[in-house]
Length: 151
Image (cartoon, rainbow, N blue to C red; front, side, top):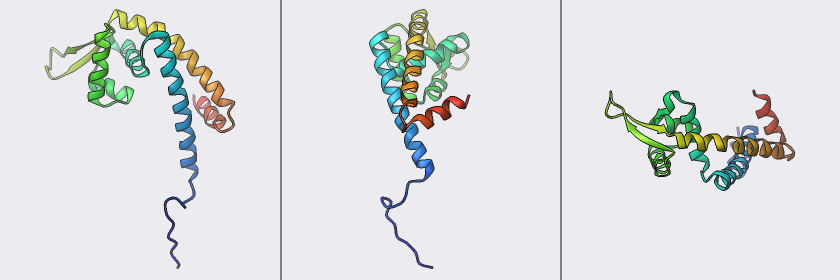
């Protein structure tokens, strides 16, 4: 049996790769617009919004730093910096667990909850608008439709 030596450049893209490429293109497009809109309208970035959203929805408005990191897809040191930024503007603070001194929590403040509530509408509007626009793009329409039908 003859063996074919194809370089990685010569290999045809699998359907999984093609779909993934479209998902990434959609993600980039939507994330860029969400970031711009949240920053302009509310003075917060997308990561700050997501952290505030998770904290606002958590029991007692607090989460362990590692759990927050896992939820928003950042590493521990990035979340530490993120919560530091939120603390600097009064939207959240770090708190040490009284039972286990090693456990550190992020806790939302009333100001942080207010900022999250103010930004929720912007987030929802921009997300819907960008998905609608992407749904009209022949390259992305199938991905948008599949995502919306998944629920």
